[in-house]
Length: 66
Image 1 (cartoon, rainbow, N blue to C red):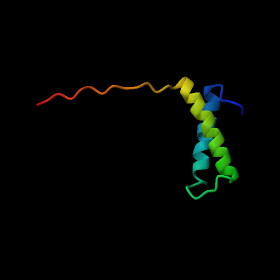
Image 2: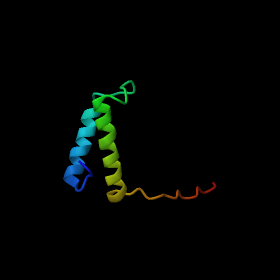
Image 3: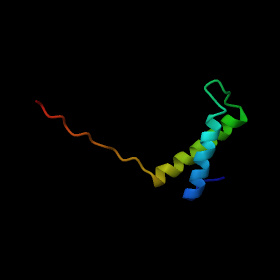
């Protein structure tokens, strides 16, 4: 998968990430095939979300003094 091009592919990728998170942990080597796949799919999802679900900056209201 070179990139995620639609919502269906995005959902499949997110589901796969959730599956992989069940089999890897902080002790899993970066060379483990599941960890490699997780990193690759996570990058694809991040790129898709950057375009289709941008996070805009938010300015918190100034608290008032009592």
